[in-house]
Image (cartoon, rainbow, N blue to C red; front, side, top):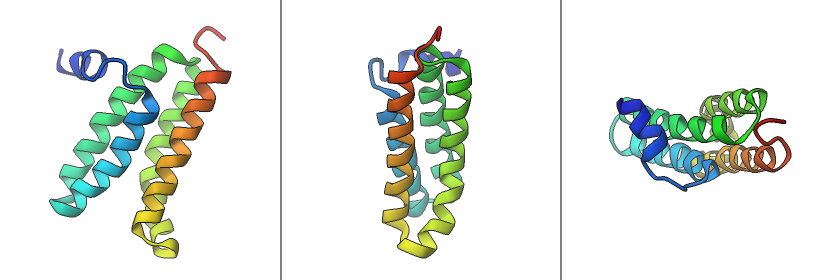
Length: 112
């Protein structure tokens, strides 16, 4: 019930690109200001909402690939931050996931 509410009814009409950006940047900020686990909750919650939107708007393979990209982005931001700094790293991975989502929603709609 709670997952259904969080993924379908919470923030209706917000595109998955915005949700993934909030999840990555917001999760990083919350983790930095509180504890890593709390940031992980933010990351997971917004990822679940984005996943529900992808499931409804893109093909199943594309939704799975976008979920993998979102999950991997958090891990990839860590070594990237050692090279370019934390803010640029988080912004880079957030932008990459949002761009991939936008392309998939335009090129691979559900039912294709």
